[in-house]
Image 1 (cartoon, one colour):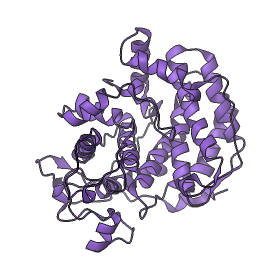
Image 2: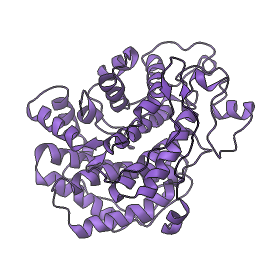
Image 3: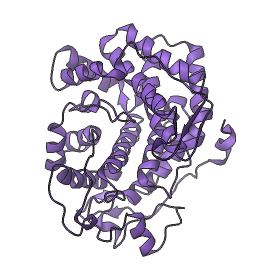
Amino acid sequence: MRNPLWLGALLVAASFWNCAPAESDDGAVEETREAPLAPAVFTHPGVLVSRQQLDFVRQQVNAGAQPWANAYSQMLSHSLASQSRTPHPRSVVECGPYSNPNLGCTDERQDALAAYANALAWYVSRDTRYANKAISLMDAWSSTITDHTNSNAPLQTAWSGAGWSRAAEIIRHTGAGWSQAGINRFATMLRNVYLPEIINGRPSTNGNWEATMMEAAIGIAVFLEDRTAYDRAVSIFRTRVPAYIYLASDGALPKAPPNSGIDTRQEIINYWQGQSTFVDGLSQETCRDFTHTGYGLASIANFAETTRHQGQDLYPEIQDRLRQAMGFHAKYDLGEAPPSWLCGGTIHRGLGPIFEVGFNALHNRLGFDMPNTQRYVEGRRPSGTNVLFVGWETLTHANNPY
């Protein structure tokens, strides 16, 4: 088991940056330099989805309104929501590169997403069978797991931790009947097994790792009401996003992740998969493939959504980067041929069901015109799950006003 004493070393300074805000290329102010503090009082449920959002979803589904009714039916028909599912916990989950070896990796990720699907179904239907299924999955793992090992341990921990924290927030705070002993054991699992693996990030890895690690960390921090972990996650997030998505206002080269050891022009180009021409919305992983880029963009939006529920809205800080990245990648994933300067003219498409949260925030709430993203999102509804950590975001976030 990882040593939980790591917390004592992670006190965050009162402020991280105190310089004037920078201007993006379109004149919008971004990246304010003073980090918000963790909320004095945490909002629950408040990991990715809020109670107001859940009430809106429940109302729409029960009224048979679209796209929510179809999205709900799609989720219930998925194997992860099956009432015959049995948990497959392991004491030590070992995940190598691309989950090879795969000793509990798929089981853990999918049990976490299954718990989340059942938690959503419980809230919409008030059928206790769904609540009980989510509880049984969470109790099985919290009474068993002690560690994650091998090279993919941080990413595996993040993928699973994101799903667990969403499910646990809903079940704990909506009268679903989870015992206090079960809640306490689950909290101990998150604090001792999950959080130490992800809270310090991995600055030299591809950016989707650290984005998803921070998504999981902020969710766990909210569930645990851990202000130190919350502030640490925000601190890393606020430097990783500018190092993952390029804007022309950054200058000739993208920003490097702090403490990554990536300093020179050639090192930055190598880190950006050999790409040497930089335009608004390009991601550090664009020329790797769109699938991994999608993981990073999804986690960035999900992180901001959680902080918004906690009273610290980070969307204005990242809105230009995120909307440019979403539109840039949507355009090419919809089929536009890449120019020769982009990834040598060869791209690997496949973003996946990852834009509903960001699109709802940026287009519906903040009012940005996002035609490429809108065509991508609306043409793929209802979005399902990538069976890693993203799930059923048409249901939870499509046109959700809250």
